Length: 204
Ligand SMILES: Cc1cc2nc3c(=O)[nH]c(=O)nc-3n(C[C@H](O)[C@H](O)[C@H](O)COP(=O)(O)O)c2cc1C
Image 1 (tube, rainbow, N blue to C red):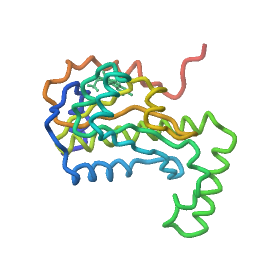
Image 2: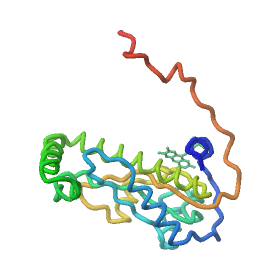
Image 3: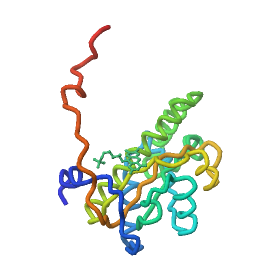
Image 4: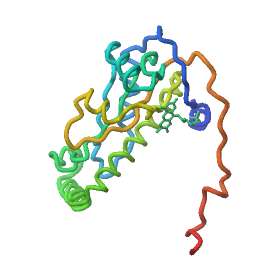
């Protein structure tokens, strides 16, 4: 599928076929595509929680997920989390396949960038999550699946329910499957002239 067809064809799908099972091969293909997403300093701090257990999913839907049907009916449901401290956990492995001097330089820069800047560690984690989510949704589209990004759940309680480790952030889920109903009509995109700023914002 052409990239633009995937971008324009992707929609937030609310209803999936609960009988459809995704093959292990397709799941691997999607996850391998997701980890091609860029991360700053190649830190790869995303951690993908694949929510498989039907009982777990049913409880999340009813207790934490505002009864959103995608949570139980998607063929694949991935919760995006990220480790904000990955930058200081054996960072050499993020540059394992480059010459030693480049590895040392990048690891050093990565430390300076993150050290003492908790706000940035969180920002980094969430922006990497966002990019990985979009990779997953576009890859799914290209493979004939539909998807829905979802943050409509009780974030704090879901963190407890999955034993989110200390120092990790929780992001949205992405539901992947075979859509059974057309998406809502597109809500409408703002005009580019409102969204694009030439060089700088107007001075106030
Ligand atoms: C981070 C994020 C969280 C979202 N959470 C939900 C959700 O919990 N449930 C839902 O049905 N749609 C959710 N959406 C879908 C948006 O409502 C949808 O993407 C938006 O209305 C634009 O529609 P489109 O994706 O079909 O173009 C979410 C989208 C994003 C990006």
